[in-house]
Image 1 (cartoon, rainbow over the protein chains, first blue to last red):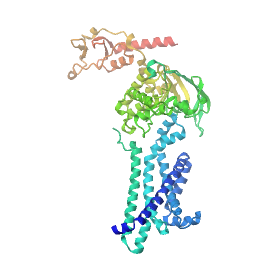
Image 2: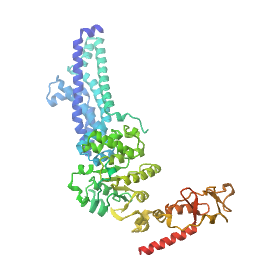
Image 3: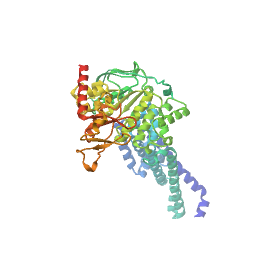
Image 4: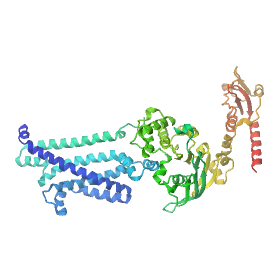
Length: 215
Length: 364
């Protein structure tokens, strides 16, 4: 095992960094896309069910199928990492739109009403009151989306896109356990680290959500 | 704070032919014409769906009237940007509506922060207000979820007062807390208003709260009509219609007694109950101990006096004592607790009857 790692450091490092890139870029894109979509679903309640239902359907498409379906639809090459990024962005958005909408809907109407009555304008109210209050729900959703992405990226290796999944394939092809173990350990580690980072962000920015009930 | 020097700007609110029809066709308020006097508490009271909350929310433009105007100090409120207008009007609601993600002190600092008050100054004002609404300094850094219902309401009031607005809107602020806490909050609210002298519009469905808190009371009825706009006393003694009389309640005659002091009553001397069938037992200092007599059960002899009244107490207190006394006699005491007069309920009824005759003689 040690031998394998020391003689393949470069390959493992490259697979790992590709994995990080492929898993996390879609998360960032999804945050940017799902915030306005989730807000629209709340602001115009007629949009809520269409958006949430379409999201659920998208989320139900198997990942391998989506990876293969995308190139003919959007005109990318079959081996392009763009396919993985777009597919994972779709999954993350599908998950996050609902989470953002539900997070915003979880804000007590008397609180938004009070904010308006205090003299908040709509945009300022959204950023100073509604989004901060929805943050715990949204971060919980973000954890699920991030961990799911870290795991789904491995499937991309079947298309030759890289990431830690490439180590699994190599192990299978050579009937050799070491790369598989290294791949699994690194993948789990990455998921755990990403999850912890989000938890730390949550602790830092939503101290109020952890204080006990009525004194 | 500025209030100590008595420099609060006082403000008059005028409803001028105000109507509101909601998009679904519901007529919420119809042709409302009345004035909320400067520096006074005006209570909007009525059954649910009578338009009282809608009327309140039109004052800070949370609801826009379909027709008519609302003026603050003679100025049409639509002449100002809604958000800016709202920053100059304090707002307190049921369940307080505190921001759960902000500490108590940050909640209180909301409006000062919005209007760009210096952070340090906003914070020290907020700390003063915290004390003013009867909360401890240690509450400052707690989050709303850590407070009791009564504490939340206090913070809500402090938040509404933070930018020193001349006008305060209160929408059933005390109805979500239990009756004992509510009574305390009401009393403290009156004390606070005594210091501040804000122009306050206060919505409640509880007529007792309206009578207790209001300088003026606007009784609304279904369809958003104003059934009567009067002082609490006028409301109890001369309800304008059967609707108002019924809404005010059956015991309005008894409650109207709270507006008169007992000072005009003719009392009997204490000596008159020192011998005879019912005897008032006094201690060495002349303080009432209890009643003895044939009507009192031996095991509870002497029977407790069931309370005493003092000069300036209301007729309501005296009447209540005469009714609850084991012998139908209310006892007045002086500052030292020494009995200095008694009144039998027969005598009280006769005097109340004379009072009623005199009052109707004056008013007709």
